[in-house]
Length: 287
Image 1 (cartoon, rainbow, N blue to C red):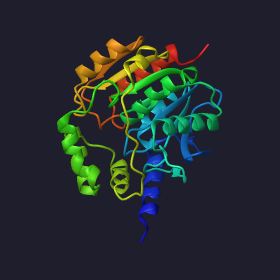
Image 2 (image 1 turned 60 degrees about the horizontal axis):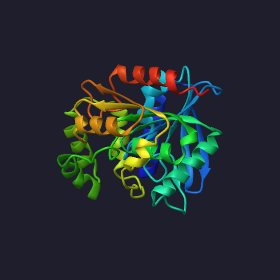
Image 3 (image 1 turned 90 degrees about the vertical axis):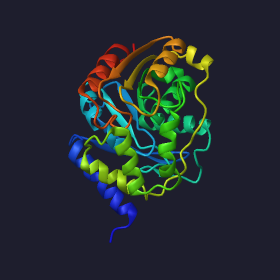
């Protein structure tokens, strides 16, 4: 019988083989916080885009976005260190926001990328937004896909539903939570198996932290594309949009029809990747 790790890695590789381009390249980047796994597609000399997944998932959720952007960009989808995925945490843990920023510094250094565009979903958007303030000279453009804890808090109902899964993750609890938030939307079965196995994968407690402060948001240099899930149960998207518009100096906002927080980015409507591609063509190529 396979161990949990072996079964998880086999499921991870099955998702990559089925959903990602055959040209996908994988790399292991050494950082002070462990080894970070990155799946990359696209021309090596194209403008780089870094994709950061949401909490509890892996970089494999970005398959359609990687395909769409990979014709004009070098796309790097990162497995967050310390979470379920192919990254391996080191002895030094990510405990504070400063650690998270230093980890991303090291990832970009390892990719040989002086400047990048960043695209994050949920918790990944929280990391990307903080990083744009931490290293403004390194982020050309910023895409936030239904970002959580960036402009408003989570909805109380969402947190109450998530609590049992967070306290004791099990396959049944993970499935029930995803089914509730997505309205039982059909999701890729290979990914569902990978998500099931993540319940038993040894992972560090995810970093939580403050929202970016109003002063930091008002001083943000990169242009921002804010994409919100029409049926998100994670937060009130109207409040998110209003807060972002009041604080960010350069922001475009769009609502993704029919999407929920957890159908993104895996089962996003086609307009999501089209909108990201148009935005990066305008803002993500540098001088």
